[in-house]
Length: 304
View (tube, rainbow, N blue to C red):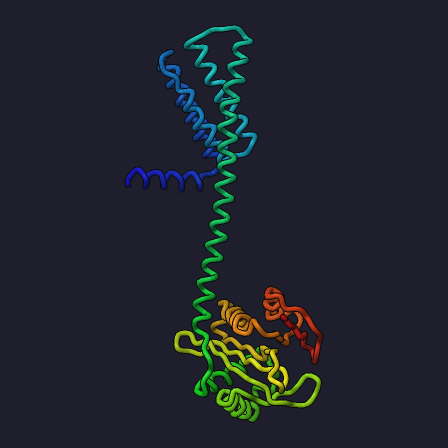
């Protein structure tokens, strides 16, 4: 356990060390093994351990420093070999130098490729971790979504009023008379599952209506209203309104509500009216909605 802990500490120090510190450590490592080589005589060679210095430089520093480390290690190995063992001619000296450079160069190349593989694997791992966290958060948020009941209507009206203040809804939703009318309409819609709505091509008709809410920490955090598009109870469903309470914005809850809408009604033609360039439009585009037309300052987005 102590060896593993020491290795982890060494890895952290190497990861956080400056390039100058890495270069100094590699030079000291190479010099230390060279001194051991000279002192051990012809019976023992530490030439293999020069690879540690080369690998360290190749892992953390650039190509120029790696080439320098390969040359230094090759010169050290050949110098020890000829000082302690043989004194052949210049041609043999050049051959041994090139042979050493090839070996240390191969070690440097493997270290460099290993670093690239390690970094690529680490990037993929971080990407998968982020995806897993987003997926877990999405599931937790979607688990909070349920059908609205009449007791939720006051909180729904409060969220609607907050949307009017933020400009997401028409300003008239903040009017007390309008809120009283919405309270009656929403309550009756929850009970009957149907409500009167304005049709885009003019007139009014009774359509299916559903309210869905998200409850977090005992508080109504968001709601959405889903309407049928025509009085014939056709396959279309419109996300007519979506509001998230200010404390729960930028938490992914709005996106979770849209995901829920797309999943629950995935066998239907989906319709959403949104303002151009809004966050809602960006969410819809990512979910393969396309612009159908524009009406009264809103872009009508559909997904078949």
